[in-house]
Length: 173
Image (cartoon, one colour):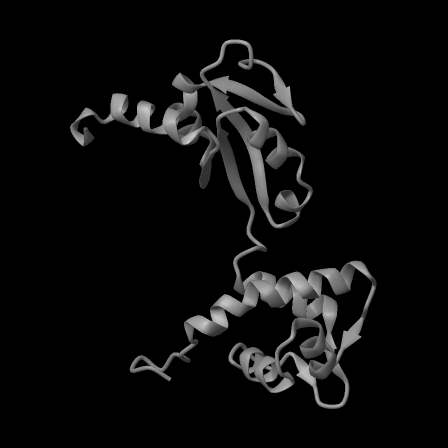
């Protein structure tokens, strides 16, 4: 516990949570209902004691001799990681990387909802990628304000990003 009475959770535990989440997600997709800390440890190449200690920092998720309910633990870790909240996302740069991201199934599953893409290329503006419209860059700021966008993903080449940034922020030269 720290001075304010809150439990201290180390950075190492926080770094392991996404890994637990990923492995539990794979087990959930295979319709595994329960798993012991020993079996989960074998899959993840860690110790069962480590798993129990890590998860105990967040409350009691398992039952001794019965193991963990995979679906419940997956959901709980998702909540801890903030993945149960929906985030509106825009992508800047409607090229190949943007297209790959928009076709990746896991983003919506984890609450990352891509609502628009932006580009400077006239041939791309007005088109759709996986049902998401590509807008002109000059609409970006107003779109973000009007749609309460939480995250912007930049998928342009580094050279283009630097060039645009120097044009927008000349004092950085």
